[in-house]
Image (cartoon, rainbow, N blue to C red):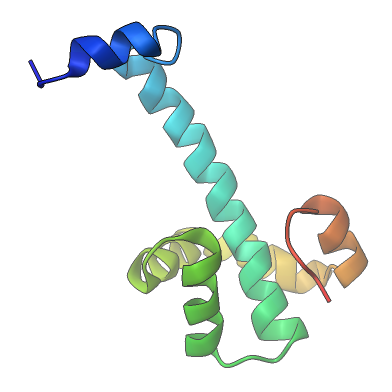
Length: 104
């Protein structure tokens, strides 16, 4: 048992979930994040015309993940990226889809 774990669970009893429920929530969050990263990459690369490495460097700060993770996720979602490029969403559409980001 980790030192102090009982104290923490007494302070936050409802926040501690079973391992299986945490894994399922993480998977949903990760998928949503990855889809958002695709739209954000499209914005930086296609709309702002930022170089690929600069777009990824900016996204590292926005999503708090490494460049290699971003590139892996973009490759995994290549079909979605193709669809995004084909549909060419406007800044307004991006702003409506993800209002938490600045889409100037």
